[in-house]
Picture 1: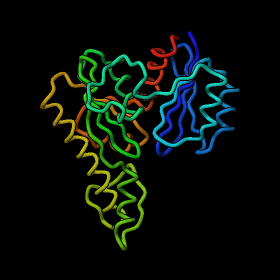
Picture 2: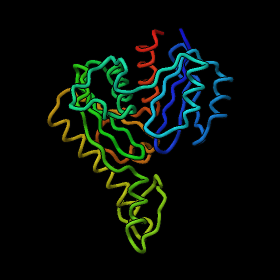
Picture 3: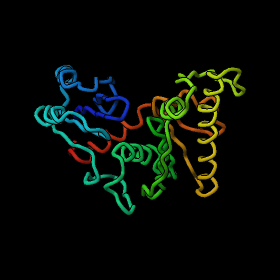
Length: 243
């Protein structure tokens, strides 16, 4: 079985995962202009294949390295997928969202799946049991909410998240933590409930670096998987690179 380097370039971090024998063997993060670091990664793991999901304007030299040293595929709306995307403008679908729903359909094929991605934005991605990705919604992510309170007010500070936030804030810092974090938890619960009312046999997955802040406060049963996007990218690589 071929080895594959899966790369996820998001608004916050440039992440990678190395697959061998169909399993993740190593993960890491590249600097924003990480051409040299990508070369070190390629030298270390020597992947035969690579796939990139990017929602940013990354350095073109990175793609050139991947093309030169691997069988490379860049995920976009022209990619061959094991799902369908019956939406009005498939070219507007983020590559990261495609990878998430492909993973959900692969691992939970008989369910209607709602995949919640917690990153710079929160994405709610619904793929039905017929493996049709029909859409979802997008709302501001955790860091965006904290930063907006500082940016659009005269006196509120920039507050950092903490997993042990109180419901009843007792100073400015904890009031903001409660408002942002508890508010997001209730938003997530509410969106899940709305989907459950409309779709039966619904399975909910959550991924992203911020997920651990909310899992203890959510009422709904959720499967958390921090590597879900990489697992989806790996499946798409198999589909496009004839692994």
